Length: 251
Image 1: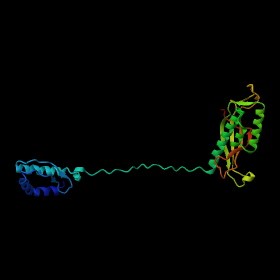
Image 2 (image 1 turned 90 degrees about the vertical axis):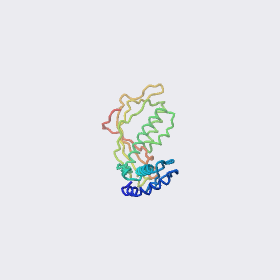
Image 3 (image 1 turned 30 degrees about the vertical axis):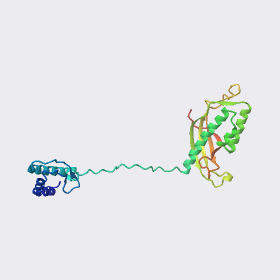
Image 4 (image 1 turned 180 degrees about the vertical axis):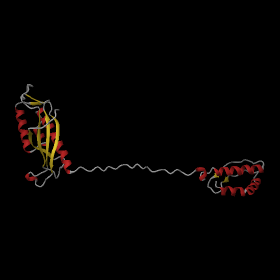
C-alpha cells in the first residue's frame, strides 16, 4: 500500500468506526481493499465491543491490503530474465566440389575392384559378370581372360589382398566427348600386399612362383562414362600400370 492510500484510510477512520458500530449486532460483510481488486475475507461473527472492534477491523483491513501482491514495495521489482547469449553455431561447411566427389568415388571403386577380384578368385562358382560392376574396357577384358584361365585349371585363391595405401593423384572432369572416350577420369595409385594370399590347385597345393613379389604398386586409370547421369556411381577401373619404384608400407 502506498503512503497516499494509508492517509486516505486513516482520514476515513471515523466514518468506518461509526459504520461498524451500527453493524455491531449484525454479521460483518467482507471488506474490499481500497484501490485494488483483492478482497479481505475475514468473517467476523457477532462483534462485541464496537469501539474495540472498529479499531481491530481497521487494522486487519490495512494489513490485508498491505499484503496485496500488486504493491511494488511488497513484491519487489521482478528480475528480468536474460536471454541466452549462446547462439547455436550454424554449420557453414562448404559443400564438396565436383572434383572432391569424383576423387572419393574413384577411391571407392578401386577398393571395391580389389574386393570383387578376391571374391571371384576365391569362389570360382561366382559368375565373372560381377567384374562389370567395377571395371570396363581393357581392364575388364584382361581380368576376365585371367580368371577364365585359372578356372579352367581348377585354381582358386586363398586369403585376401590388402591395400596398404591409396592415393588419388589427379582428377580430370572433361566430359566433352563421351562417345570418343573423352570423359571424366582419375589417376589412383595403390600399394597392395599379397603376402597373405595364395593361389592353389584343386588338391590345395600352392602354384605361386617363389619369385613372386608380395608387395607392389599399381597406377589405375578410373573413368566415368556416365558422368551426366551417374556422377557418383558411374566410375569403373579402365587400365592398370605397375609402378617400378614405390615406397609402399607392409600390411
